[in-house]
Image (cartoon, rainbow, N blue to C red; front, side, top):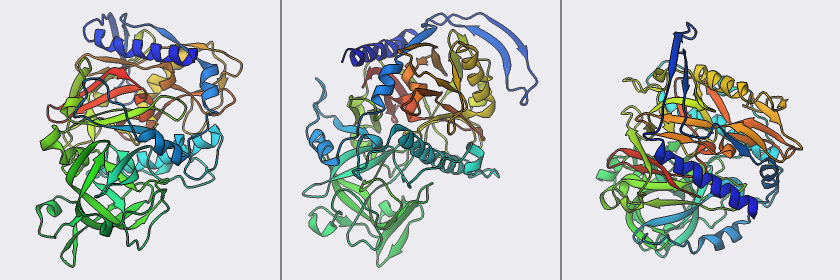
Amino acid sequence: MKNMSASRALLLLVVAMLLHLLTCTTTTTTTSTATTHHNTITKAKTKTSSYPDFQLLNVKQAITETKIRPLKPSLYQELSMNIPNDSGSEGKQKLKLVHRDKVSFNNKFHNHSHVFHARMQRDLKRVVSLIRRVSSGSTASYGVEDFGSEVVSGMDQGSGEYFVRIGVGSPPRSQYMVIDSGSDIVWVQCKPCTQCYHQTDPLFDPADSASFMGVSCSSAVCDQVDNAGCNSGRCRYEVSYGDGSSTKGTLALETLTLGRTVVQNVAIGCGHMNQGMFVGAAGLLGLGGGSMSFVGQLSRERGNAFSYCLVSRVTNSNGFLEFGSEAMPVGAAWIPLIRNPHSPSYYYIGLSGLGVGDMKVPISEDIFELTELGNGGVVMDTGTAVTRFPTVAYEAFRDAFIDQTGNLPRASGVSIFDTCYNLFGFLSVRVPTVSFYFSGGPILTLPANNFLIPVDDAGTFCFAFAPSPSGLSILGNIQQEGIQISVDGANEFVGFGPNVC
């Protein structure tokens, strides 16, 4: 318990530093240009003196937490029944978020190494799919082989990293839903089901809901659906995902219940043909930037805003997801939200550089820019685990970290990670601070657990970043863990902090 309290206190301190870093960065710079990788690397050493150069990683605690057994769905359901709101939070629609590895849907317990490799396999598929979607206007073609070695796993793990539990229909039927910040549709599996995968809860039956109403092909709602079709006068939808999963069915207006809040006339997909495995979930809650996402549909009433805090399986804390302008926190470090008209579903942010220890890594800011053609840029994604940077940026970043961890015993690379350490027998180790320099000034200093993670229960820890063969950077959920992130779509800002989870 003392260890958990200490970790939480450290995390609070780290996030609090964000607010001071808006104006406190001082630099001294000397530059010379390197001619590697199309002159994208500038040899600039930038000294920053506004945050600690090093921090401690609690190795023993991290290894212990890898052995935490996941909850049974029935227990998680009980924990999700009543979610206490913070003081002054009336009107907020707040849900408990849980990582998929924290809930056991098949009553099997797998060791941390197995869970890790399965997660990396999902991650590869997710990143390949994401890059293909945002690169649709280019001639580039990417496959899993472009992202490092293929990860071997004993079972297909399907889609989705984080779940919420909401009520669908009237009366509400509780369902597990995958959240996805890169998707623009809400859907659930429905009876009658021609083809459905296994889910934990009973299939939703529209005939049992007094509020279910089909959408006609001539409806304005149907016009907003990509690749919409028509069958017997009813609007049809179809969505495919990067891992081969898909859903097909009819569009409807339905009532969703989030805690004590009831939201009527939400356009949802009623899936009658679904394949893939969403690990027990009944469907997906799209949180993307498009008009058909849950956030987009709430925009008139709730200001097109939401806030979330992600936690991993290996913690006793709870994450949360809440909607509405009232959920926007006071005291966050705000940066501009960038829109990509070629990929409107995704949330982009500006990144100007990366820091290791007390140094800003010599990387040209151009590497992270979103071009007029919609290529490059930095996407925040709840469904991607590991943060990716273009190869040239990743290598400079990684090498800077290796230079400042020469005292730690190395280990062979594991899965997509090429920089690993053997920390067996250590209680804690001193590691350099890792930071993101956002455009406009703020600097996000990551907790040690967000960049040096255990990949087994035997003391192997890896630097939790990976190269991307494209120009796209992705801010993954491992690096987002424990920090409140808020998206204010109406005012075009993204906030980090001030709260933790």
